[in-house]
Image 1: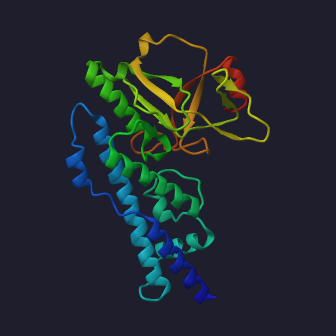
Image 2: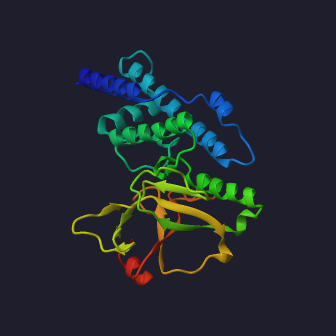
Image 3: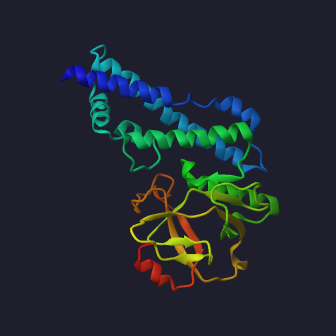
Length: 277
């Protein structure tokens, strides 16, 4: 009945509003992490916080409005009707998705994932630039990776278009006691269609019935592409979601594809391509 719907929407809204941290105070944070030429990460942090603030703002505003609408205190617009319906079926409302990073998660998992992302940035703000960057936490992963190259480019005065990444899969699962001297450690990636074998430090066949496997922390090390020594690798496409497709955004970046990550392989590349790795 209508009463049940009203109660359900009110409870769900209250639950989400309770869980969500407040918007980031970007002006205060800029004092601690000013925009400086030598540290692009401060700019990356600022851009990420602004994007997340927009998303938090739209979620909070729409939840407060939809609660008023189901109680009959304000008019139920078509946009609020869609928020209301999405919440009832456990889907992320379009109003949020339009301000969000790509995600295939249902509503509950989406909110939990959003909170993990916000926690990642809150820890960064409180404790300083992390030793290991949790890659899934970024709204716009490409600008973070560009920032890593930018730092290297400015430090060594090498044009950024000459630079690329070399990749090393480390032995760390999630954390490292210190950051690398050059480049960054990144965590949070999954392999689909194969697994990483720590014993031999190569890609290996998936274990039975296991679709996704976490991969240890990867060291993204910037360098001059022309100097890279060719190695036996599989150029593994890296995506934000498991959908493996993406439309081009206004910045010309794919909304889903991030980059190719070279992973050591003792089998020909075609072997992993056939498995859709």
